[in-house]
Image 1: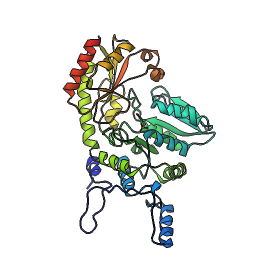
Image 2: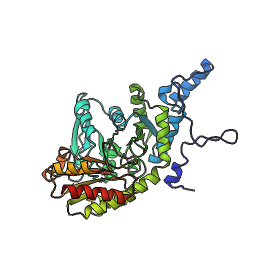
Image 3: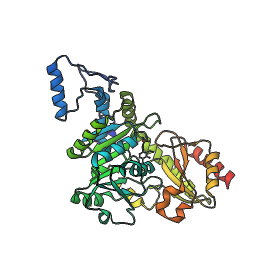
Length: 391
Ligand SMILES: Cc1ncc(COP(=O)(O)O)c(C=O)c1O
């Protein structure tokens, strides 16, 4: 019987019953040393690990808690192997270091999460990786591939304005050329969208956001579609000593149990707030994929299970300073980076981060909102007072 993804989320990674019963939750196994009762037992464990079995000979490799989270992430994303990292950015750098070397070319979507540009400029370029950027709305990705292109890096969808991307034609073109496609799927967090099912080779999720759901955790996951990519990721993961503690793995697993229900509520709340904002005279535009006015709405409807709590509002008749005043006047929205927790957040969108959209947006006043799990009418009242007092 095929089960819905949210049903599977409540079961995946749970411990099997022993002796007829047991806990529903996986234990938090805290250890650095793994000890063996004989040399033969140690040798056998080393052999099983080398053969790709999910067993450990040392704490850094992770124990039952991390294994359960890896299994749940594979189930969610439709992948074969998951590698855990101490932050979303660490999962991104792990993956790019695993798949790229000196002389290789990396093609990155222009709407990328800004720290990836820093990784490109400050690290990958230094080790001889050539990096260029593309706008999927303007350019044919295939035409941007070079003989030495090894990775195309996309975000599903883009940071800040949530530009949707038609992934399947890109992955088909890349597969034909032996180019790997890596997708940052933090927006969908394995539930709203599944890049691997559209042909991507690695799906990256900052578990810091919706997987955790409670703003109490830093975590990254790199989920590989096939054994070839898993092998390359594993070698780099082991070489770099990337590891995640069992308490964080437990929190991420706990977050996964309620991921679907939280995302539905974030979407319901954000949709109400987005529609209200879009009707205000001081608002030029609201960027939210579930709104019919969003340029990627048709793709979103075709490819995604829903939307989340992230939206960006572009003001009309307010300058940059006034948009910051709105942020300052909000009482229910904390000013802060990150998103995906239960709480509403506001952060100005720095104009230079939208430079690739041309001058109109470079001069616009925009705020990114994360709509949390509060009552949406309370959030609307708060936005109304902040906008009225400023405008
Ligand atoms: C789209 C996206 N990817 C990756 C990350 C990085 O995650 P972390 O903060 O856990 O390093 C973020 C963080 O804001 C993000 O927004």
